[in-house]
Image (cartoon, rainbow, N blue to C red; front, side, top):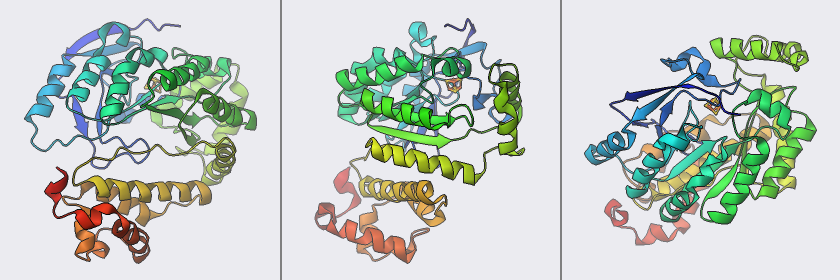
Length: 382
Ligand code: SF4
């Protein structure tokens, strides 16, 4: 089904946004929105909340950013400190929503990122992405490319209610299969989020999403039980549920949230445990493998990935976030020198959040690496 939206053309001065820290799930360091607004109009979409200050009727008007590729290229050429890192297109819009068929803004920026060797992580609910497999495979071969399909149910009716204008789950699963076949260098998987309580958190659906993802050839599955309910987005979602054939979930849902934005941690922990068992059973990794640069950041990123993976696994297994693991992992991404040099100086314990346990965990890993002994200075990798 196509959502007939009003299309507006507008020129913007900026295209690329750099995050202070990488996203520890998708590894994105830069974001870019080829469009503003999203014709997929998912009823739970957080873009409806006030914090995004979108200037248009989010799901009925889509702004096409004119000359986005030229603006992007000039930003990359003029920036002296813009190191290649993972770009995550889309955020509060789907980079492969229907307008992409004619405007090709996503395709245009992908070509620029390929030229300047920036790795890419694309999240989508559209099978249109298969149009660009060969380009994405080239990017993956040269640097790194990950594609994640957001799939939260295998029930076509529930999906049509929650995500009325996206590709149906069957098509998304088929797209995973096609990417696996035609783009062998691309890392592809499922983003199992948001999992709507009382609609999608039953054991049958949890297993179906994991089983079907595995059958399609997914390399990973990232999951997040519950959803965020925030100001105007919460009201929109509640009104939609109230007017639907699923209205019986409203009372238990509101009782679960108790006026908060997130479901309580005991609920999240319960669903986490079930998902963990299923992912083990189907042998599906629950983390995305990170892109590792080949410059002075190489070991900073590798160690950061290890620490953040460890933190995430602990969170899923115990329900508790490990503050030091998380911040030690995140801060490493902003170091101006290699952690190997720091280790050789005996200064690891002076890094932010590097507790004695963290030093004991990573020091032997660094010392065992080939780079530890051959490396003389940061320029060796550049
Ligand atoms: S595809 Fe993503 S951005 Fe678009 S409406 Fe759905 S949740 Fe929002």
